[in-house]
Image 1 (cartoon, one colour):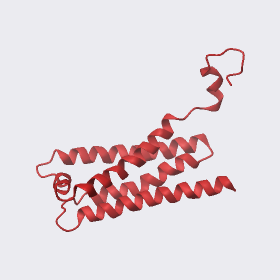
Image 2 (tube, helix red, strand yellow):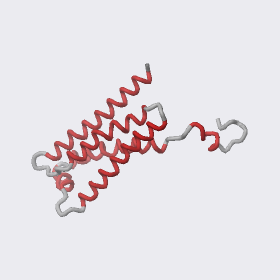
Image 3 (tube, rainbow, N blue to C red):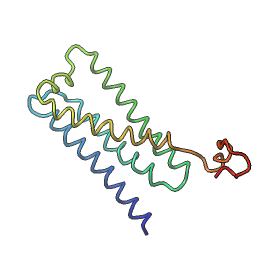
Length: 143
């Protein structure tokens, strides 16, 4: 029962993170803020943030890696798109940062947070069968 509650809690946090990102993305695209692609990148975050949260709740090792890898792949591809956008003649991200710097900073924190969560899940992955092989102590079973 506690495992199911943890799963729901992390999934709600992931969805709330994605919703916060899309709300800020809509704000950055509206009015004279000028960063129209913020909505597109935020929509990717709506999918990536729950995937990163699900990576921490999945029981099967393969599912953990698939969820975390999928979220990380989405984040990296979209981040490359943002970097490509920065090389344009009139980058909307720079215009938005000049108009509403705190909103852009908040959006960036949300963006980076779910990518770090997915990356952390992949880094902390350790198959249970190899734990004894990684131990420097001999004869104790790797405990």
